[in-house]
Image (cartoon, rainbow, N blue to C red; front, side, top):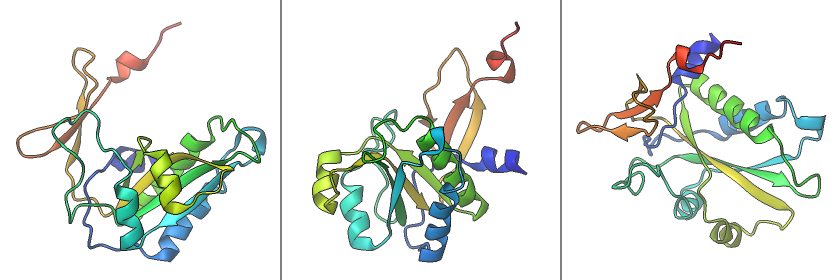
Length: 189
């Protein structure tokens, strides 16, 4: 059921780095994005698949991980993603991407979860360094990076208390994600 996939789809930040995702799977994850809705149906999104060790390491250095976890610089060696899908907007098509990136990223991640993979959308990217390292054409605007791999992280949903929305980890390194209750999101009109 879709509800099971949505509940299992978390922002995973630690992976079994030795687990390699094959090219066919990564191509399939990108290909599913072609079928997602697009504002005005102009389809401005483009993708780069990065999954070799050298490129992975180069990209990893341009990323910032988990802003609320001030004492954590990101995954350790052995816990890094095995692949990345970089989402761009093609400025030759439009400079406003509307809801397209969110719809495509969520669809891609749900398809990943269906394959027992996990991921994390990362928008805190050193874009200048990334563009230099990968020689990105000027017409492509980096929107987000989706880190992918086999999750090794224990992520639990908890009910939000006192509007405290920040995720956190406990002493056992369990990652907790507060969510508002159903009654908190319903507006009676």
